[in-house]
Every structure is written in C-alpha cells, then in structure tokens.
Length: 226
Image: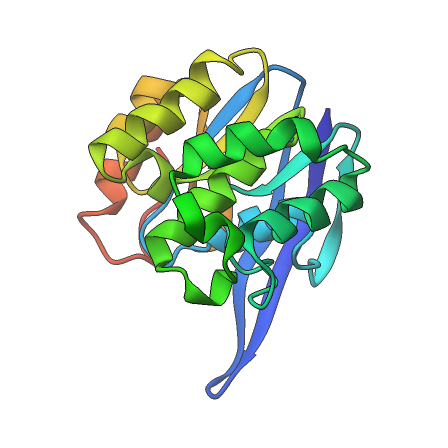
C-alpha cells in the first residue's frame, strides 16, 4: 500500500507562483488500480512524477510501502552517452538486479538491433520510448505508473505494452493518468478526476466520467462535482 497525504506542488514561473496540485489525498493497495482523468495541463504528469519520487512535493507526504515504478516510458533518466545495454546495466545496479537474464527480453521487445549497443543520444524518440518501457518491464514492481502515451501509441506498440502490463502483470497495482475517459472505462476499476489542482474521487468510474465530461463544457475554474 502507499498513500498520498495532503500533497501540494507549486512552481515558480515568470508570472509568479503557480500551484499545480492542491491538497491531493488518496491511498492505493496492492493489486488495485486507479484511473485519473484530467484535461491537458491539469497536473497529471506532475502527480505521477511526485509519486515516482522524480520530484518532491512542496508540502505533504507520500508514503510508499510497496515498490513503485518510474513513469513508464520516461526517458529523462537515461544517460545519453551510454548505450542502451549500459543503461540497462546501470538501472539494474540501482535496483540490485542481475542484468544478464534481462538482456534477451529487452533486446527482443525494443527491436533496436545494433542500436542496442549504440549511445542513446543516437536514438529517435520512438526508440528511446521502447527502451524505457522495456526497462520498466525488466524490473518487477508492485505498482506501475502509466501515462496515457503508453496506451494510446501506435497499434502494434500498444498491443505489446497491453500484454506486458495488463495480462502478464494483472496482479499488480497501477495508476493510469489520461484525458481519455474510454481508456479509464476499459482498464480501471476506480477513477478520480484531477480538476483545478484537486483530486476528486468518485464512487464509480461512470460517475467520474460524467463529471469529467461536464467539466469540459465550462471554464476550468467553475466546474464543481454534483
């Protein structure tokens, strides 16, 4: 289980302080999942970064009592001067895992061919995304953090990601953030809406979808849950 307790995040901008997340609270148990709906720019990716530990909250706390992945397909942690193979070795050292049994899976999934042994700085964005996802699957976590780009990519990549995440690891917890209600409806048992920095929970996925649809028809600062 892990919990997000009274978490807020504020950034300094040219226009002054901007609060992206405001007193966010929720818990997630092992084997459970949560879909988070939000407009583009609502703070979904910020929340995922905070949960993963890539950034620290301005206030509040995140208590992790199970292992949590970095955001799937996050390429920001790559060492660009290292090869794909060396990045795998580096990540495995961080998590105390032997990289050697994982090389065949990563090579097969990424389909990088000779580029697997070339510096990541030579990769296209798509190549880096495939490598990042494969590395995420190579390390086994209790909970996976999923951005909509993984489940909404090109069809072949989507199918392979879906099989790895939602079939082979169906017993794991996950958090999925997206602006697409249908993805939430298909994959998630619980849903909340991130609106005006607040995470609003709902009893059912249908209720979350209804509020989210309503919020899209009015100015962002006027929508309130019924």
